[in-house]
Length: 143
Picture 1 (spheres, rainbow, N blue to C red):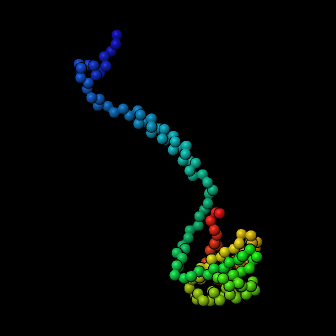
Picture 2 (cartoon, one colour; picture 1 turned 90 degrees about the vertical axis):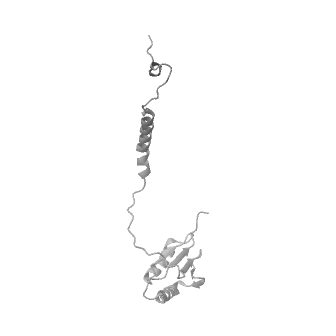
Picture 3 (tube, one colour; picture 1 turned 180 degrees about the vertical axis):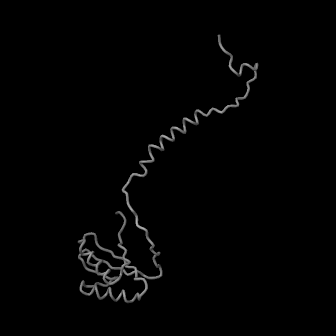
């Protein structure tokens, strides 16, 4: 014998259902929970780096930076003037003296990629000795 459905009890009229079927909602939430549990550890994987705190000031845009370039032959240029390696220290001292006792001027260092690392480090050492510590290494984007 078949049992009558609840909608068939009231004669020909159907009564509105007062219940909300939450089963599909629970199923979706469980699937999302599993997805997040699986992907969350993957998002944090990487190289652990302890980043330093910095109290760096923004760059002064009013002052023109000093550009030092090293070409592929190892010649040194300050702005567009060629400087010998012997005269480099004196020129850097003059640049540091022009800035006064305030912040040292910003220096942009451009070096050819074919240069020896030691050659570039000698110039950076001279910059450090002269007190020009605000050095930015200039590169170009991917070719």
